[in-house]
Image 1 (cartoon, rainbow, N blue to C red):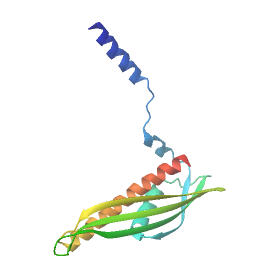
Image 2: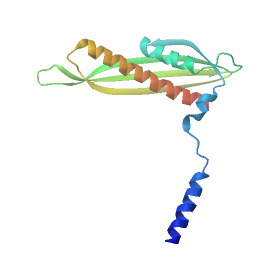
Image 3: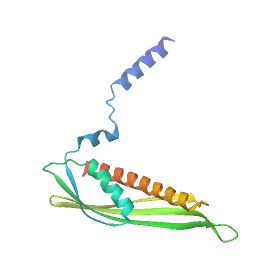
Length: 151
């Protein structure tokens, strides 16, 4: 019994002193200005990405990062029923970033896909697809911000 109590106290002591830091703790310490030089492709996703990047950019900074964005969005038919009408779609987005900082430049791509059912109401389906695009943009911009933190 005494060994168990000693082991619990010892393990709690180790856990208390492990110096844990969250992954996203560096995001609040933004010390650079992001300039979007150009973007092409799907305008809804690009506008959402630009808005998020402007929120995470510092207005005045000595360090300037230039970014070129190229987004390709496709909505493919995934499945059809026995009558030949569409039942499932797959939304796929591929975004390529060219990041330039002083004399250094890097390029990387982010791809996301999402499967969803066809809805009977076209208006609801368009709204749902707009929400899917917004979620794609949020995910892609968070991946870009994490990449900029280590660039």
